Length: 102
Image (tube, rainbow, N blue to C red; front, side, top):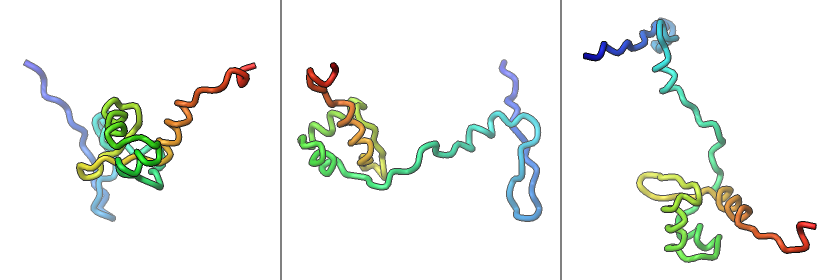
């Protein structure tokens, strides 16, 4: 039989009714304190808008999304693409000319 998992305890901060800091083993608490490491994108595009930007069909855009070739966001069940991710994808897809590598 597995032993009981030890959960962290927190001290209350009487000044503002929040939990102040973990007491004891706080390894589990750090899992819930994750903050975004990247800034949020300024421009989000729909599948149709992203497809127009890349000059491909919406079904081609969905294929790239399903294949995880382009990062995307799910916003309330809808798919959105950051314009910066699309530009980055285009940059990665660029194939230089022969004279460019000399």
